[in-house]
Length: 303
Ligand code: 13P
Ligand code: SF4
Image (cartoon, rainbow, N blue to C red; front, side, top):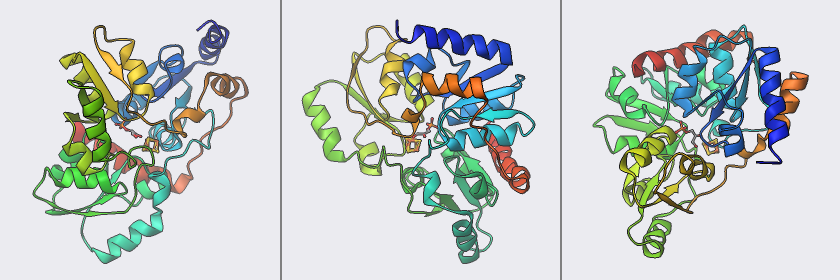
Protein backbone atom coordinates (compact mmCIF):
# COMPACT_ATOMS: atom_id res chain seq x y z
CA UNK A 1 0.00 0.00 0.00
CA UNK A 2 2.72 2.62 0.71
CA UNK A 3 3.89 2.26 -2.93
CA UNK A 4 0.35 2.37 -4.23
CA UNK A 5 -0.76 5.41 -2.23
CA UNK A 6 0.56 8.17 -4.57
CA UNK A 7 -0.94 6.41 -7.61
CA UNK A 8 -4.26 5.87 -5.88
CA UNK A 9 -4.32 9.49 -4.71
CA UNK A 10 -3.62 10.84 -8.20
CA UNK A 11 -6.13 8.52 -9.93
CA UNK A 12 -8.86 9.57 -7.52
CA UNK A 13 -7.95 13.25 -7.98
CA UNK A 14 -8.06 12.93 -11.78
CA UNK A 15 -11.39 11.10 -11.59
CA UNK A 16 -12.92 14.08 -9.80
CA UNK A 17 -11.26 16.62 -12.09
CA UNK A 18 -12.45 14.87 -15.27
CA UNK A 19 -15.82 13.62 -13.99
CA UNK A 20 -14.84 10.00 -14.55
CA UNK A 21 -16.03 6.79 -12.94
CA UNK A 22 -14.09 3.52 -12.60
CA UNK A 23 -15.93 0.22 -13.14
CA UNK A 24 -13.85 -2.74 -11.97
CA UNK A 25 -14.45 -6.46 -12.31
CA UNK A 26 -14.14 -8.78 -9.29
CA UNK A 27 -10.89 -10.17 -10.78
CA UNK A 28 -9.04 -6.87 -10.44
CA UNK A 29 -6.29 -6.61 -7.82
CA UNK A 30 -7.16 -5.28 -4.33
CA UNK A 31 -5.32 -2.01 -5.00
CA UNK A 32 -7.72 -1.37 -7.90
CA UNK A 33 -10.79 -2.98 -6.30
CA UNK A 34 -10.45 -1.12 -3.01
CA UNK A 35 -8.21 1.80 -3.98
CA UNK A 36 -9.78 3.41 -7.05
CA UNK A 37 -12.94 1.57 -8.20
CA UNK A 38 -16.30 3.32 -7.83
CA UNK A 39 -18.31 0.25 -8.83
CA UNK A 40 -17.20 -3.37 -8.55
CA UNK A 41 -19.04 -6.52 -9.56
CA UNK A 42 -19.48 -9.47 -11.85
CA UNK A 43 -20.23 -9.03 -15.56
CA UNK A 44 -23.98 -8.66 -15.02
CA UNK A 45 -23.63 -6.15 -12.18
CA UNK A 46 -21.15 -4.07 -14.20
CA UNK A 47 -23.48 -4.06 -17.22
CA UNK A 48 -26.47 -3.04 -15.08
CA UNK A 49 -24.44 -0.32 -13.34
CA UNK A 50 -23.15 0.93 -16.70
CA UNK A 51 -26.75 1.82 -17.64
CA UNK A 52 -26.88 4.20 -14.64
CA UNK A 53 -23.58 6.06 -15.06
CA UNK A 54 -23.91 9.85 -15.04
CA UNK A 55 -20.20 10.70 -15.32
CA UNK A 56 -18.75 11.79 -18.69
CA UNK A 57 -16.01 9.16 -18.75
CA UNK A 58 -15.99 5.47 -17.84
CA UNK A 59 -12.65 3.77 -17.18
CA UNK A 60 -13.22 0.02 -17.45
CA UNK A 61 -10.88 -2.03 -15.30
CA UNK A 62 -11.54 -5.43 -16.78
CA UNK A 63 -11.20 -7.01 -20.19
CA UNK A 64 -12.09 -5.56 -23.59
CA UNK A 65 -15.54 -7.13 -23.98
CA UNK A 66 -16.57 -5.52 -20.67
CA UNK A 67 -15.46 -2.11 -21.93
CA UNK A 68 -17.35 -2.70 -25.18
CA UNK A 69 -20.49 -3.53 -23.19
CA UNK A 70 -20.15 -0.25 -21.28
CA UNK A 71 -19.73 1.61 -24.58
CA UNK A 72 -22.79 -0.11 -26.09
CA UNK A 73 -24.84 1.04 -23.13
CA UNK A 74 -23.30 4.55 -23.18
CA UNK A 75 -22.58 5.34 -26.84
CA UNK A 76 -22.27 9.08 -26.22
CA UNK A 77 -19.81 8.75 -23.31
CA UNK A 78 -16.07 8.25 -23.49
CA UNK A 79 -15.16 4.71 -22.45
CA UNK A 80 -11.48 4.06 -21.73
CA UNK A 81 -9.64 0.79 -21.18
CA UNK A 82 -6.15 1.13 -19.67
CA UNK A 83 -4.77 -1.62 -21.93
CA UNK A 84 -6.78 -2.63 -25.00
CA UNK A 85 -4.80 -5.87 -25.28
CA UNK A 86 -6.79 -7.18 -22.29
CA UNK A 87 -8.71 -9.78 -24.28
CA UNK A 88 -10.47 -13.02 -23.41
CA UNK A 89 -10.01 -16.51 -24.88
CA UNK A 90 -13.79 -16.89 -25.05
CA UNK A 91 -14.37 -13.64 -26.91
CA UNK A 92 -11.64 -14.50 -29.42
CA UNK A 93 -12.96 -18.03 -30.01
CA UNK A 94 -15.85 -17.00 -32.24
CA UNK A 95 -16.65 -14.47 -34.98
CA UNK A 96 -19.92 -13.04 -36.27
CA UNK A 97 -19.45 -15.18 -39.41
CA UNK A 98 -19.27 -18.31 -37.23
CA UNK A 99 -22.55 -17.33 -35.58
CA UNK A 100 -24.23 -16.68 -38.93
CA UNK A 101 -23.07 -20.12 -40.11
CA UNK A 102 -24.62 -21.72 -36.99
CA UNK A 103 -27.86 -19.83 -37.57
CA UNK A 104 -27.92 -21.12 -41.16
CA UNK A 105 -27.32 -24.66 -39.89
CA UNK A 106 -30.07 -24.41 -37.24
CA UNK A 107 -32.71 -22.09 -38.74
CA UNK A 108 -35.03 -20.46 -36.21
CA UNK A 109 -33.07 -21.63 -33.15
CA UNK A 110 -32.43 -18.65 -30.84
CA UNK A 111 -28.83 -17.70 -30.07
CA UNK A 112 -27.95 -17.05 -26.40
CA UNK A 113 -24.49 -15.50 -26.26
CA UNK A 114 -22.32 -15.23 -23.19
CA UNK A 115 -21.28 -11.59 -22.68
CA UNK A 116 -17.66 -12.79 -23.01
CA UNK A 117 -17.92 -12.05 -26.73
CA UNK A 118 -17.23 -9.22 -29.16
CA UNK A 119 -19.76 -6.53 -30.06
CA UNK A 120 -19.85 -8.01 -33.60
CA UNK A 121 -20.95 -11.38 -32.18
CA UNK A 122 -23.48 -9.71 -29.85
CA UNK A 123 -24.91 -7.91 -32.89
CA UNK A 124 -25.98 -11.23 -34.48
CA UNK A 125 -27.29 -12.63 -31.19
CA UNK A 126 -30.86 -12.88 -29.90
CA UNK A 127 -30.05 -12.35 -26.22
CA UNK A 128 -26.92 -12.26 -24.10
CA UNK A 129 -26.35 -14.01 -20.79
CA UNK A 130 -23.75 -13.99 -18.04
CA UNK A 131 -22.69 -16.75 -15.67
CA UNK A 132 -25.20 -15.44 -13.11
CA UNK A 133 -28.30 -15.59 -15.31
CA UNK A 134 -27.43 -18.26 -17.93
CA UNK A 135 -30.02 -20.79 -16.75
CA UNK A 136 -32.77 -18.15 -16.32
CA UNK A 137 -32.17 -16.77 -19.82
CA UNK A 138 -32.13 -20.23 -21.44
CA UNK A 139 -35.37 -21.11 -19.61
CA UNK A 140 -37.00 -17.80 -20.60
CA UNK A 141 -36.20 -18.06 -24.31
CA UNK A 142 -39.25 -19.22 -26.27
CA UNK A 143 -37.77 -22.41 -27.76
CA UNK A 144 -37.00 -25.96 -26.64
CA UNK A 145 -33.67 -25.81 -28.46
CA UNK A 146 -31.13 -23.04 -27.87
CA UNK A 147 -27.76 -22.23 -29.39
CA UNK A 148 -25.51 -21.26 -26.48
CA UNK A 149 -22.14 -19.75 -27.39
CA UNK A 150 -19.18 -19.49 -27.06
CA UNK A 151 -18.36 -21.26 -23.75
CA UNK A 152 -18.82 -25.02 -24.12
CA UNK A 153 -18.48 -25.51 -20.35
CA UNK A 154 -20.96 -22.85 -19.27
CA UNK A 155 -23.30 -24.37 -21.87
CA UNK A 156 -22.73 -27.93 -20.61
CA UNK A 157 -23.15 -26.84 -16.98
CA UNK A 158 -26.39 -25.08 -17.91
CA UNK A 159 -27.60 -28.06 -19.97
CA UNK A 160 -27.41 -30.22 -16.83
CA UNK A 161 -30.03 -27.99 -15.17
CA UNK A 162 -32.55 -27.63 -17.98
CA UNK A 163 -34.68 -29.95 -20.12
CA UNK A 164 -33.91 -27.83 -23.19
CA UNK A 165 -31.55 -29.06 -25.89
CA UNK A 166 -28.46 -26.89 -26.00
CA UNK A 167 -26.24 -26.59 -29.06
CA UNK A 168 -22.73 -25.56 -28.03
CA UNK A 169 -19.60 -23.94 -29.51
CA UNK A 170 -16.09 -25.15 -28.71
CA UNK A 171 -14.86 -22.02 -26.88
CA UNK A 172 -13.34 -22.16 -23.41
CA UNK A 173 -11.88 -19.86 -20.79
CA UNK A 174 -8.12 -20.44 -20.72
CA UNK A 175 -8.09 -19.78 -16.97
CA UNK A 176 -10.88 -22.18 -15.93
CA UNK A 177 -10.59 -24.95 -18.54
CA UNK A 178 -7.31 -26.16 -17.01
CA UNK A 179 -8.89 -27.19 -13.69
CA UNK A 180 -9.58 -30.93 -13.47
CA UNK A 181 -11.55 -33.24 -11.17
CA UNK A 182 -8.16 -34.60 -10.02
CA UNK A 183 -7.19 -31.08 -8.93
CA UNK A 184 -10.30 -30.92 -6.76
CA UNK A 185 -9.54 -34.37 -5.27
CA UNK A 186 -5.99 -33.18 -4.49
CA UNK A 187 -7.32 -30.00 -2.87
CA UNK A 188 -9.72 -32.07 -0.71
CA UNK A 189 -6.83 -34.32 0.38
CA UNK A 190 -4.53 -31.34 1.08
CA UNK A 191 -7.12 -29.24 2.93
CA UNK A 192 -9.48 -31.57 4.84
CA UNK A 193 -12.78 -29.87 5.69
CA UNK A 194 -12.26 -26.93 3.33
CA UNK A 195 -15.19 -25.92 1.15
CA UNK A 196 -14.36 -25.79 -2.54
CA UNK A 197 -16.27 -23.43 -4.80
CA UNK A 198 -15.83 -22.78 -8.52
CA UNK A 199 -16.86 -20.66 -11.48
CA UNK A 200 -19.17 -22.32 -14.08
CA UNK A 201 -16.57 -21.75 -16.81
CA UNK A 202 -14.89 -24.85 -15.32
CA UNK A 203 -15.60 -28.24 -16.97
CA UNK A 204 -18.68 -30.09 -15.61
CA UNK A 205 -16.62 -32.79 -13.85
CA UNK A 206 -14.93 -30.02 -11.84
CA UNK A 207 -18.24 -28.37 -10.98
CA UNK A 208 -19.67 -31.77 -9.94
CA UNK A 209 -16.81 -32.21 -7.47
CA UNK A 210 -17.26 -28.81 -5.78
CA UNK A 211 -19.54 -27.55 -3.00
CA UNK A 212 -20.90 -24.57 -4.89
CA UNK A 213 -20.64 -23.00 -8.34
CA UNK A 214 -21.67 -19.53 -9.42
CA UNK A 215 -20.68 -16.25 -10.99
CA UNK A 216 -17.92 -14.26 -9.34
CA UNK A 217 -20.54 -12.22 -7.43
CA UNK A 218 -22.41 -15.39 -6.42
CA UNK A 219 -19.15 -16.91 -5.12
CA UNK A 220 -18.45 -13.79 -3.04
CA UNK A 221 -22.00 -13.84 -1.63
CA UNK A 222 -21.70 -17.54 -0.83
CA UNK A 223 -18.50 -17.03 1.19
CA UNK A 224 -19.94 -14.02 3.03
CA UNK A 225 -23.15 -15.90 3.85
CA UNK A 226 -21.79 -19.37 4.64
CA UNK A 227 -18.58 -18.14 6.34
CA UNK A 228 -16.80 -21.52 6.02
CA UNK A 229 -13.74 -21.94 8.26
CA UNK A 230 -11.66 -22.76 5.17
CA UNK A 231 -12.44 -22.19 1.51
CA UNK A 232 -10.76 -22.66 -1.86
CA UNK A 233 -12.06 -20.41 -4.66
CA UNK A 234 -11.37 -22.28 -7.90
CA UNK A 235 -11.21 -19.25 -10.15
CA UNK A 236 -9.01 -16.18 -10.71
CA UNK A 237 -6.61 -15.48 -7.83
CA UNK A 238 -7.66 -11.90 -7.02
CA UNK A 239 -11.09 -13.13 -5.95
CA UNK A 240 -9.77 -14.61 -2.70
CA UNK A 241 -7.64 -11.51 -2.02
CA UNK A 242 -10.65 -9.22 -2.41
CA UNK A 243 -13.12 -11.31 -0.40
CA UNK A 244 -10.57 -12.01 2.34
CA UNK A 245 -10.39 -8.28 3.06
CA UNK A 246 -14.12 -8.30 3.86
CA UNK A 247 -14.51 -11.68 5.57
CA UNK A 248 -13.18 -12.25 9.06
CA UNK A 249 -12.70 -15.79 10.33
CA UNK A 250 -12.43 -17.47 6.91
CA UNK A 251 -9.11 -18.96 5.76
CA UNK A 252 -8.64 -18.65 2.00
CA UNK A 253 -6.53 -21.49 0.61
CA UNK A 254 -4.88 -21.30 -2.79
CA UNK A 255 -6.31 -23.26 -5.73
CA UNK A 256 -6.57 -20.49 -8.28
CA UNK A 257 -5.19 -19.39 -11.66
CA UNK A 258 -4.26 -15.92 -12.88
CA UNK A 259 -6.05 -14.41 -15.88
CA UNK A 260 -3.26 -12.75 -17.87
CA UNK A 261 -5.79 -10.47 -19.57
CA UNK A 262 -7.33 -9.14 -16.36
CA UNK A 263 -3.83 -8.62 -15.00
CA UNK A 264 -2.90 -6.29 -17.86
CA UNK A 265 -4.76 -3.58 -15.94
CA UNK A 266 -2.76 -1.91 -13.18
CA UNK A 267 -2.63 1.38 -11.30
CA UNK A 268 0.07 2.76 -13.60
CA UNK A 269 -1.92 2.30 -16.81
CA UNK A 270 -5.17 3.43 -15.15
CA UNK A 271 -3.43 6.70 -14.27
CA UNK A 272 -1.96 6.96 -17.78
CA UNK A 273 -5.37 6.25 -19.29
CA UNK A 274 -7.07 9.02 -17.31
CA UNK A 275 -4.21 11.44 -17.88
CA UNK A 276 -4.01 10.96 -21.67
CA UNK A 277 -7.63 9.88 -22.29
CA UNK A 278 -6.44 6.66 -23.95
CA UNK A 279 -7.25 3.97 -25.00
CA UNK A 280 -10.72 4.91 -26.11
CA UNK A 281 -13.09 2.04 -26.86
CA UNK A 282 -14.78 2.50 -30.23
CA UNK A 283 -17.61 0.26 -31.44
CA UNK A 284 -18.49 0.61 -35.15
CA UNK A 285 -21.69 2.65 -35.51
CA UNK A 286 -23.60 -0.11 -37.33
CA UNK A 287 -22.97 -2.61 -34.51
CA UNK A 288 -24.14 -0.42 -31.64
CA UNK A 289 -27.93 -0.77 -31.99
CA UNK A 290 -28.09 -4.56 -32.63
CA UNK A 291 -25.39 -5.44 -30.05
CA UNK A 292 -26.93 -3.15 -27.47
CA UNK A 293 -30.36 -4.74 -28.05
CA UNK A 294 -29.06 -8.20 -27.09
CA UNK A 295 -27.48 -6.82 -23.89
CA UNK A 296 -30.56 -4.78 -22.97
CA UNK A 297 -32.80 -7.80 -23.58
CA UNK A 298 -30.66 -9.76 -21.12
CA UNK A 299 -30.90 -7.00 -18.50
CA UNK A 300 -34.71 -6.81 -18.96
CA UNK A 301 -34.98 -10.60 -18.60
CA UNK A 302 -32.77 -10.60 -15.48
CA UNK A 303 -34.76 -8.19 -13.33
P1 13P B 1 -18.53 -13.22 -14.02
O1 13P B 1 -19.63 -12.70 -14.87
O2 13P B 1 -18.94 -14.37 -13.16
O3 13P B 1 -17.94 -12.10 -13.22
O4 13P B 1 -17.40 -13.83 -14.96
C1 13P B 1 -16.65 -13.09 -15.84
C2 13P B 1 -15.44 -13.80 -16.24
O5 13P B 1 -14.74 -13.40 -17.15
C3 13P B 1 -15.11 -15.02 -15.55
O6 13P B 1 -13.97 -15.59 -16.07
FE1 SF4 C 1 -11.86 -14.46 -20.28
FE2 SF4 C 1 -11.30 -16.48 -18.67
FE3 SF4 C 1 -10.02 -14.20 -18.33
FE4 SF4 C 1 -12.61 -14.38 -17.69
S1 SF4 C 1 -10.91 -15.46 -16.72
S2 SF4 C 1 -11.64 -12.75 -18.85
S3 SF4 C 1 -13.33 -15.80 -19.26
S4 SF4 C 1 -9.90 -15.55 -20.14
